[in-house]
Image (tube, rainbow over all chains, first blue to last red; front, side):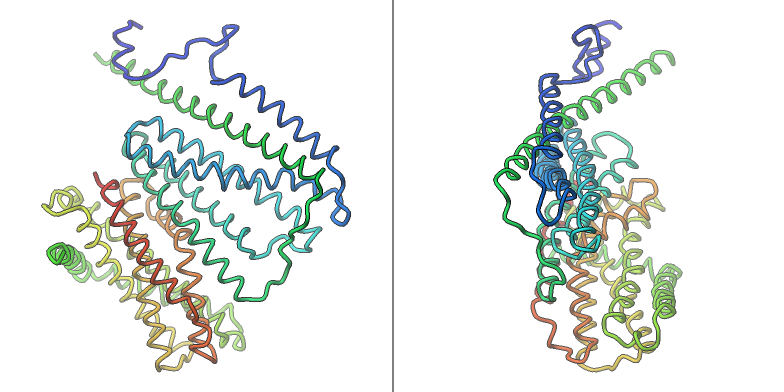
Length: 251
Length: 225
């Protein structure tokens, strides 16, 4: 392809080839290696190093993955969707749209992990899979809101219009989160709670493992975010090249 | 401001006139609400049918089906006859279009909600009195909140395929706080002590309506550029 043609596609960075001639998919190999190492350590720590909980037993080890997943989804991931949506509406660069989409996808995956590990842990400990506790219920509703976000993205034709529409939904959805939590919290505190909050004083050894897991999951989140954005950029670039090629053949 | 409201009312009146002239839409909505009341009744034994909890569930399910159709129709109709561009070319602020659509769908949702409430009152032997009027007030607040969120979402989904089901999926999770508050109010109003369990829930509904009305007005410009 001539250079002039490439320029006319507008703004696409050519990643070319990475080290050893492999396609440069991984944007930050250093971060990737770090995240992988941290996750391996986190797994070992959660399964072997952490002391076994006295009453709950080994099932409590789910906590080391459950809580960091919830933190990633409800903390950085969905806040990023909100922030990047505002950034898109302010700057009108599809880059921010891709970041918002990637953060939403990762957020939905980690919310799903939270919602699966939660009941698995609760059944042997509380005797039930589910209780209408504010944090649980809010997490479930957040899952619905952001699956809706992804669905909207999925069915709308790509481009600036889609970016604009989903950005609006990303902002409105985020504003709804504290109101949802408040409503459920008021609803459940007016009624007698069937179960205790499940809070426990954490052992220092457990806390160390938990912090390690939180760090590992945060690294994993950042790495997944960059990889997913790179994938979307590559995919958009491929679409643009295909369109340019077809246009060229038509002439 | 009064000019804006007058312009919004003109748009709302146009929509309502269209709906009245092609009455099949409204009739379908209301019948759907009636059918939900009916179908739910089969799952309830005569004993549980009288409990305020069961009745509230039936009432809000029956209200939501036609209500969601009402908010979907506000932009659907424009799209079908290619009038959306015309509407956007109107020499009014975009916010006015949002308010107009909000008013028309709120009135539609309220009208169908009112008819559903009457059908429900007859089938479930609900006593008519001050609590019943208060229940109507709760329906007004839900219709407003539903339209504030729904009109914005309908404008988002209007250019998308499979918009009907998608609209429901993106609106309902956002409405959760409003629905919790509405259900708490109706459980109280339909129960033995109508005013006892209301506490802060009506305020919560008003707050939800005000917040999402403000969000809608602020952000609608970005939806229909």
